[in-house]
Length: 240
Image (cartoon, one colour):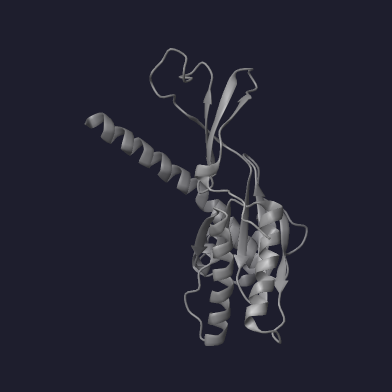
């Protein structure tokens, strides 16, 4: 029987290692929303060294995997991007999950779930970026997209992943700088940003990669917001 892996931020344990200068480093919890990990270096407010003050964390950024998903029941585009500190993102998986329209909807959803579980098991992404469905003229299409999104988001949430939804305009703005960009322009920018030798195809996979890139582009803003909140909270406490 399949059992979800525990990847909630609160479940992560701290580890002690040695930095490049030979000083011990206590690795704190990793925040998948911001991509940050708070470390404390020995000799600078290290706990238990004669100081009762809380150590000042040194924030570092580590490797993360983000799963982008362009949801659909007949075709579900996916892309797993790897992001390392100081490097541009790299596509480690890109493709489409297909289910047969002739099969019953419950069977198709189960097949999609199995494929998504395989991706989660293999890459252990810290975040899922999925397209937010704002409007669909075709009701049948809207329902199938919503069903596929629900399966993916439930699977991600059960594993403690951050789940973010982005509108098509948000994705286009983040990837191309223009909220009304064409699909061809998005594909070209995905190719450029990921350093691919050719345009990512099919379009569903390219859209999934664009979603993952959008999430990675938003992470620095999330880090800045978290830092601002921390400073504000610290100021509030000192003012009391």
